[in-house]
Length: 305
Image 1: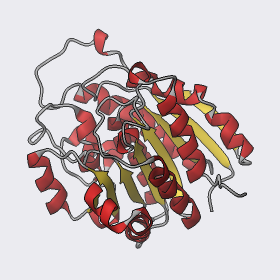
Image 2: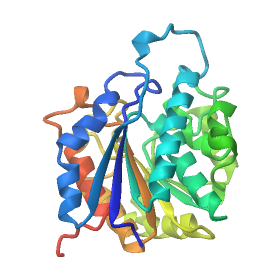
Image 3: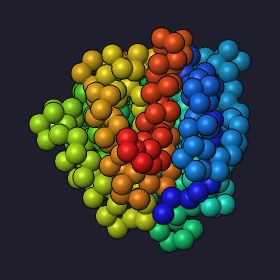
């Protein structure tokens, strides 16, 4: 069962993205009333603050196929330790990004927590992008397009071996949902890795209820819980305008909520991260407000209580 205690952890990272602004995402989500919404659901909420992240202005940029890799890995290591401690203390970690590179840290922490108990965790990754690039396949060198690959052991050792072991996940327990913008070479990593991938076409054809039922089954097969990694750009830009890499044709407002409600019903969620909220590009904090709503749905909020 989900822990009645929740640990909110901010990861104000924007080193992995191509546009500035997502470092303000954790503050925007907090300002949108996350703690009050969780408390109303009966959770004891502890805000553990933000991890330290260096500012790009303080770093001399170098040509690289994985920009700011060393600095990102250091921040992810700090995040991993904090997530592992929160889970070890019986709390439910909710991590607020920041760009999606932070997922390498969140999953390292959760995986290590379960590994200590000789258990495994599965992941449901909801995103417009596959995040399965490596430095060899990435056209941009932006690390926020690499974290899912790193969790299954593909990519630079700085990310794959966070916490001292690799891989963090078995590909058969990884489910990618909502993708609609995948790089050409990256698509080979997706199809050859053994992960489960549902494109937006499959969401359209099967319906979100069926997709989520299959996702929960795959992510929970032989594991002891599920981590949710939710990129706000998975939602259509009409509903989530404040993201750095918007792609038309995404999840509708209700599809996103249904996905969260199905996950909540499973009683298998053990941690959540929500990433890529960019207040600079948002309108009246709409995207952060939606992020809070979706977290609440995943944590048990219902239309009829």
